[in-house]
Image (cartoon, rainbow, N blue to C red; front, side, top):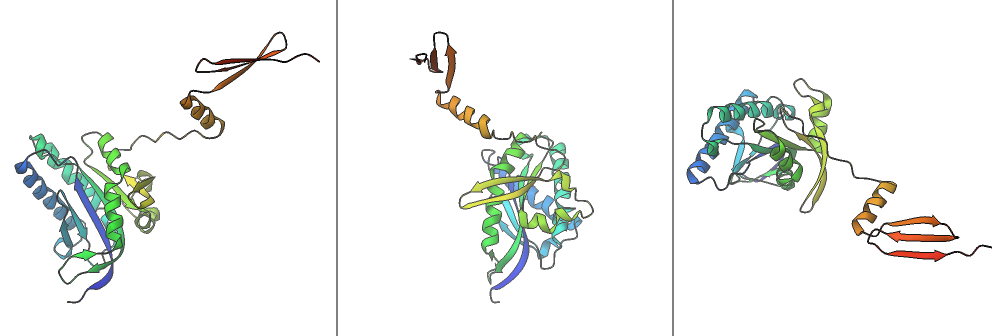
Length: 247
């Protein structure tokens, strides 16, 4: 078999805070992730056995089969995965084997290698999405009952969410920007069952100037004084008085 280039949808999943739980919990959690992913794919009508599955240590990268409808990887797959993880965590008494995950979705031309592995730039983008701060921050700030945060590329969003397909609520996706290594991009964040609070907007114009001045500790106050003088004072306590003679 020669290397072949094909357009494929790709999914990556990473277990949150997987380190430090011990080897027994690590092995169990890896198996749990594979089981719930396989079930979620089956419920979504995607052949799990036909997917290329690659180990990420505490996660998995999955390349969907040729012809997989990308929207099906959003719904029902992501929602099924969230529900399966939620059920697992509810039934598991041991906190070390409860798992929450970050997930990323992208698509593009990848190379199917004779060895069975997959390579190509879309996988680099997928890795950056999986590691992006917005997805990490959203999951860390979500209630424990929220088992998943998803970050999808703009390309994937344009082909799926924005069209309003059945089962996909566009209002539940929020545009975010991020920079990871060499990639600076916009993406779309989704946390099934929870909406993160909006990020505070950065001040602009005069408000931003005042904030910068305060951070430097040298904002200046100008006051008129009787006797034809002007008083200049800064926040650090310096005061300068200039006397202006009357005409």
